[in-house]
Image 1 (cartoon, rainbow, N blue to C red):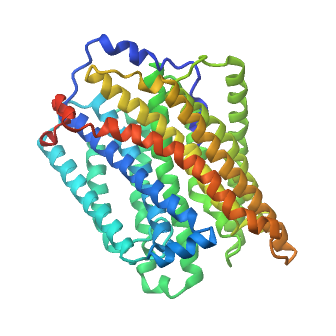
Image 2 (image 1 turned 90 degrees about the vertical axis):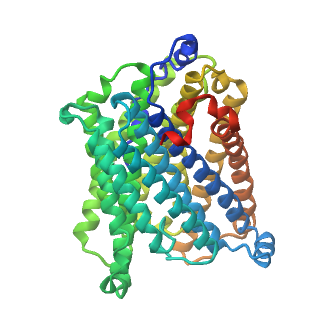
Image 3 (image 1 turned 60 degrees about the vertical axis):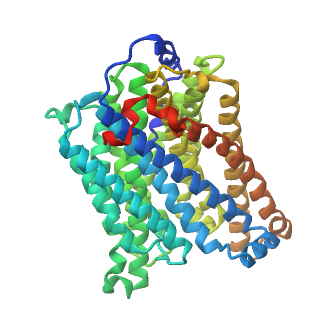
Length: 488
């Protein structure tokens, strides 16, 4: 599952200080660096829009009548699902890359010609890959891989673009790297971890792997688990960075506790795939290692409970803004998903729920509840900072409407994940006794999934509209020379 870094952010962070700084002359920012941050942020929000749209259409397939009608219209679930999962992963990676480029604004001077060229090539390569993946999946060209359902030819520009990103990243590492805050360490590991696990995702192209389905499944689940671990490093590093920027204090990011949590989470990133492969013929030592290390997350769970108790006692601001609400939501989701991940790592319980909607709910809770809430908080901060830089109104994220959207989104996602967990558990127990799911569950499950999913989708869609309007404001954007494409 990874490191629950959302637990480190105190509720009394002074988010509103950013708004009060609107009348203060902002520091000079290299226009090229600001536009790079904005470009990747825009790409992340667009990817999330695609993931949401295809996810909404996909869940409608669970209603038999609607699914039959969509099939007749040529809208296939086999197309919608890989589009949804692929662009959900793209949203997370691009969001993390945007935050890293915002960090470059802090530490680096004006962008040189070489770095500018590499960023330009990186954007072009990823744009080609994005269009190729979208078009090929719509055309019915699949690989059948989880998170990598597209034709592997499009992996080439993805990996080349990532290498260019890694090149720029390494150039900005300081000589005192060993004494840097923990988010820099996370991003550094994440940059190279991604290239390793992304390459591993393509081992199925080797004939010896492809001709051995069991071996292929072991590698695919292992590579998928570490791929999730690599983007978790970007998400949680982003949260540490956001916490430091909001509080103005990097002391926690330099603490032994922060690095201890990083080490435990990184170890889990290499082994937590095991609860997906218990059912495969495999060396028992691998299964035991995976199980024992997964149980170390109890340490992190204890820390979550401790921080939540402190949070309740402190009772943050009476009218928290969207940034604080997203961070608080991430804390609660971290607690719930850690408990869930520990449960599904216990082999007898794993046998009951594997292949049921519980796994779907767990995946959604982790990606939306933790990764999503962290990145949403970061997006709000990044956009708000850009509004302040332009000396325009930046209070939109403190409005009652935005607070209602954040709360409504979390309620919708909680209802959906809760229902999937409940329904999947019932299905698993009945399956254990060689029984079909109860009729009342079979009849109600599709409609409740759509209903709860629609609640979450409506609130998220409204948030996306808000972000898209601020990120793509037309010609008004050119008021800031740092946002002109020619600069990069």
